[in-house]
Length: 175
Image (cartoon, rainbow, N blue to C red; front, side, top):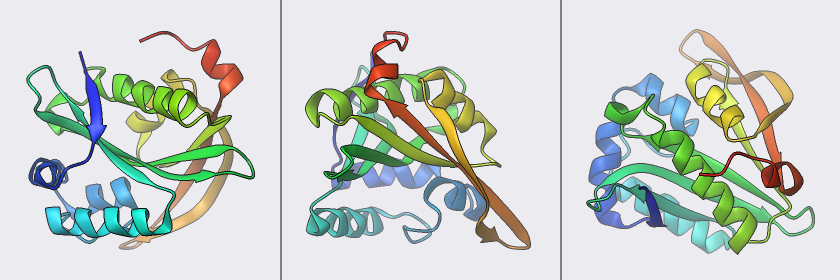
C-alpha cells in the first residue's frame, strides 16, 4: 500500500539520493530545481510554489512510512479548471515495479477529488519513455509534441504534453 502526504524537509535527503546524475536531474525537473536537489533546494522550491499560491509538493510513502516517491501539483488554473503535475520521481530501486503508476494514480485522485480539477496535465521528455508509458497506463493521453523543449549538452530534447480528463479518469483502472 502506498500513501501520499505533504512534502517535509526531512524527505529531501531521500529524494537527493534518487537523482543520480545531471541527466537524470534534467529529465526529472527540467533544471527548475538546482542540482544536486538538496533538502534546502527543495524547500526553496516549495516556498516559491506556496508564495505563488498555486502549488504543493507531496511525498509517497511505503507501508513503513519511508519515502519512495515524490511529485508536485504545480498549479491549479481556475479559469480552465486544470491541475498540472510535475517533478514526478520514484526511488530508482522501485522503478518498474508499479510504484510509479500507483503514485500517479494517487496524484490524479488528489487533483480530481480534493481539488475538483476537470483535467490534469503533465509534460514528459521523449528520452523518458518509461515515464511516458507509466502516464499512459494511468490514463493520460498525448496531446502535443514539442520537438525542442530543452537543450542538454549537445542534445535537443522534445516533450509530450499529456492530459487526463475527469471523464476519462472515471473509466481508468482502479487502484
